[in-house]
Image 1 (tube, rainbow, N blue to C red):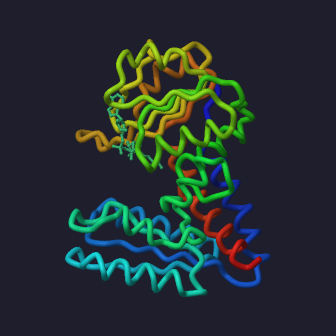
Image 2 (tube, rainbow, N blue to C red):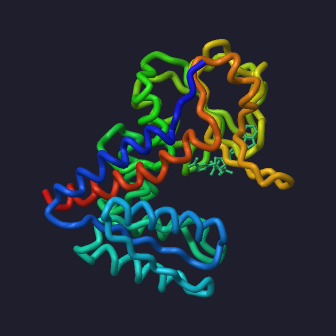
Length: 279
Ligand code: NAD
């Protein structure tokens, strides 16, 4: 079994992106919109700020009060769409329930949609066209590439069908010529399906849900899950790592696998947006 070291790959990409930014005529810039006081969002946005600072990308946070109206949110998005000094726009989810996040994503200009949630980008992904796609699955594709894991003709099973991970993951694997099965909470005989996977991507949010008996000998196992244990506060994945690792050819640990790839992929997307806008 070989460990897929996302931390190491992300560090390498970070150095490459740093050099890339130095060669640009001006600094790329990312605008992040955060609404309300979700504690996890505050941490995620801080991490994004820190990474931008490290890469010399201009970072601006717009922190809106939880009581804002949908029109206030849309007005800000439109303002950022029109601002030529802004290359990438990210709306941090979740946002308060009275707001319509789908409409908000629709209003972010596709060329600035560095998170890949605008339906134009989702549609382009579905047609295997050049686009921005969700950062976590794109980061996973980079990990597979880095470890020379071929996808063509492989049975790929994705567990989870969220817009952030499962769906774009399935699409990216399909675009890379994999044979795809998507499983979710209504799937019957899940273990029978997971046992067919050459590449198994798990994005559920349920600690140690995937056990060794659900995994084929020699499979590549990608664990997207991040679960914090209430007693020890330890982070663990959706895969029973200790037992599954004995059976597979490659596996991502939690933490240090998929997680570090998400932010670095976002940074890559901001630079890509800058370059596209300066062509
Ligand atoms: P979500 O809650 O939006 O989706 C979970 C999916 O799992 C759903 O599609 C659901 O149908 C499926 N599911 C639930 N129970 C199931 C079961 N018993 N059998 C089969 N399928 C089942 O979650 P999400 O946003 O896709 O995130 C999933 C996990 O990945 C979470 O732990 C989250 O924290 C983590 N995550 C990690 C990163 C990262 O950067 N590493 C990024 C995003 C999400």
